[in-house]
Length: 134
Length: 309
Image (tube, rainbow over all chains, first blue to last red; front, side, top):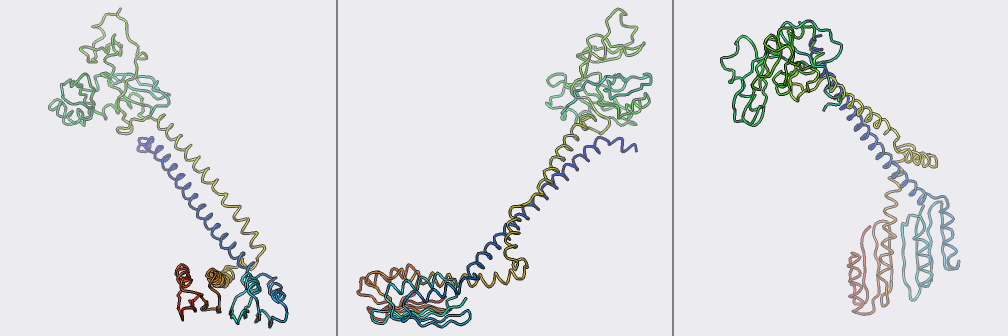
């Protein structure tokens, strides 16, 4: 008891310093924890946004309709069309340069997997063969 | 650091003093009965240097059986007052007089007040404290004229210095420690509050995640998410690459260059171009180099560009 009384000031000051240090540590631990959690949330959010965006592009429901429109870009006589389930094999024959550009642009803007794209020039016209799936 | 100001009552400590009853913390003025003083010239600048040589100053003057501590007061340039005292003796005397150490803030030697004791201080009926030749000494009260004015202890200004017997050489008394501790606790409280307030983590981000997951329930499962990511990421990369190559090849068609054929599948691509003349061929080659394509010149008018995906 005498010892405690003797070192009372030191004990009080020591306890106050310890409490202060503990509070400081708590604050920094909490800050680190929250920052880490925020980073994790941001990372997850970016990942989900990317996934959602990719899913909306490559897994969109309206793709078959968009693919179907390719058939109407040039006269039916120039198109050979074979669509089965989610696969398309199409040939566009006797295309002028402008028609070729038009069809090619439409294909490139479609969210489909291009398995084959073949363009051949015969005289002044072009033939475009395309195999794609979605 | 003294937030409270050193305005504590000063009490004289002398042999034969009556028992005290204290309700507050006090400062003690130690009379020369409790210490030995010696004035000496010493060419040192700082007190700690003087204190180092203090034991040698009292060589042969002190009893070997007691433990002494030393205190120094600078009188003048190179002139020091060396004080030797026995802390245990002072402690015992204080406690015997009903003055517990925890009620003692600081102890001052009478010598520290020497310049203030311009008239005698009555210690008890028999003795008085007086400054003679710049040294505080106890003299018999009978040697002093009764008419001479006496100095009240309360009129003395507490000097800087003194000693503390509570915590070794601690210069802080309880009030100072309490003030410092209170400040530390206050800061600690602020830090704790700040730490707790950090609880409101990225709620906006969480809300957006919830919204995305609500629209795409399949993404809730980590396994499904990874599987979807694998599927779409590679597909996205490959398809963007194919389209980029077609665009880069189309940039190589200019006046004098026509596309003869283009083949692109899942692994490779090649394109054949017809070129009108040598100048165009050079320009075409430069463009191909810029686009980092491999060029094979079949004949002066036919060029094949190929690569893998």
